[in-house]
Image (cartoon, rainbow, N blue to C red):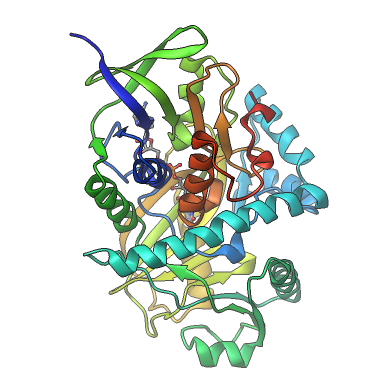
Length: 417
Ligand SMILES: Cc1cc2nc3c(=O)[nH]c(=O)nc-3n(C[C@H](O)[C@H](O)[C@H](O)COP(=O)(O)OP(=O)(O)OC[C@H]3O[C@@H](n4cnc5c(N)ncnc54)[C@H](O)[C@@H]3O)c2cc1C
């Protein structure tokens, strides 16, 4: 059987692959997206659903060095790195530590907020025209804390974001409880970011997929890429479980599976999984009305139509998606300490996902040096939903030779390749 000729082949049907497929199709390319499972069931399935430019921060931040040593020793910490003799982890940690400086932070925050702000507008407009709701709601976001250190961290983040044009306001504990009565009296204060939004993550992927197909794009689920062939500095064939393809352009959007794909492509993509959990509960005495970040526990609380999603923890792993009960309990107990939950709430759904994390916390967006027709769109760490449409716009600008949405240099893949 002959290969199917394709203009653009996007590999990976998460929010990143779908938004880039959508943008390229809208811009006149003919796109086929293939996905090994069903669209939207990777890391894009159960995330906290936050579309919050105020959180457009990379994972490595100045002052984290001592903390990261503490995490190595404490499996209960919101960020955990299991000590293990691994060359991959050691190399990743070295780059991670090297990225913890003020200059890198400011460069990363500048471009990450640009693509996140673009994304917020994209989703708001999509919500206005989509025939079915995907839970988009622009209620703002509360960052709350019970400790002076947590308050100082929230205020520091607010000041950094004010410089990027993202409004935020300091509130006392009493003001916060008036706005959000679901919070317990131990809250000392926090910050209210009024412009932030949230949505249902899977429904959001599906809304983008629907519009992509209306634009003439094609989606082929249950199609797994298992190898590539090369000729003249390009990928000549993509071998999949449902036929082989000869594309003009291949877009890699395989999230946390990208390191494995990189082996077949003979390139370097140093992405590790940042394992996190989300729990859906509906046993509340007072149901939260706003998305809430509990600063010292790093727990994200998101209101849903009939329940609440509690998300948190980041454990650096390779491809391990096992469930650790102790870490799930830490989310539940942390939430019980701050919110008016009923005792021993039922968890209606428990989900875990692996955030695709580059060591410097900035995605890889750009052409490969090794294969001229390979474009990377991977490594969106904790920000994949909120940055996807902006990341897609910037990627399409680079692919189509348009003026870029923001400075593409921090995203250059050759910093790792
Ligand atoms: C607990 C938690 C909370 C989070 N909260 C938020 C949040 O509030 N806001 C936010 O912006 N981000 C959040 N994130 C991060 C966000 O979920 C990710 O950044 C985002 O989903 C990454 O999208 P992706 O498309 O790159 O990856 P994925 O959604 O994982 O998509 C990659 C796809 O590639 C497919 N694939 C892999 N290998 C192959 C192959 N060989 N052939 C074909 N297909 C393949 C996979 O099946 C998968 O569907 C959170 C993550 C977690 C874990």
